Image 1: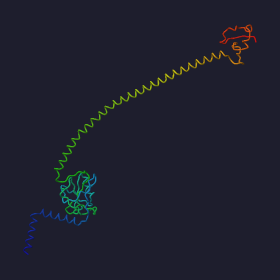
Image 2: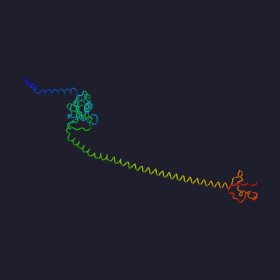
Image 3: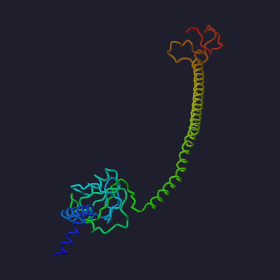
Length: 290
């Protein structure tokens, strides 16, 4: 009886001495009871390569690292916490614990805190078949803000990576500058090429004109020569026709040369009024007695 009394007095003294600690213990107990009361078995989503603008599972961890508690959605899911809450707020990492609690941050928990997926077995309050963490275990997600996310404790590695990136960018900068300076050179060479083409075109045009003029001159020369030949032939034909005379029955029968007519050749000098020794190669008027 005395021992029971002593224990009760000790508890009362402890409660009076540490009221805040007793209140914290009660809050933790109430939180765990609330989680256990809604405990629905879920399956942890396997680790998936990160993609932009969408949450992807990065494993189950035994700590939240630098993530901070944001809220406890009534219907918690990977999309509700990872995208609607953390990504919308600008965070690169999201995490769920106990089925309904959502955490956000910009780095993963330490890589050494990664545990087996079976530890995260509390179903999400919005979709119980998928696990949203476990009892003191966190399901961690990449929200899709960036594909490259560091782990807590990897600051030295990230700094060296940053310096390497800066060195690479400074090395590649002159190459870009050289490429830019080559562009005006190519542009400046174009006018020269244009001038050469113009000269070639001009030469071709002049050559065509010269050939056309030569062809036209040759054509005119041959045509004029042909016309002269035709005129000369016409003169010769006219002379021959005048010499031979027209055929019998024409009205110009009196114009026939008597030297070519046998009847006229047998006539005596007295029969004609014109001497026989005259030149009859030309057409002349002649009067005879029939």
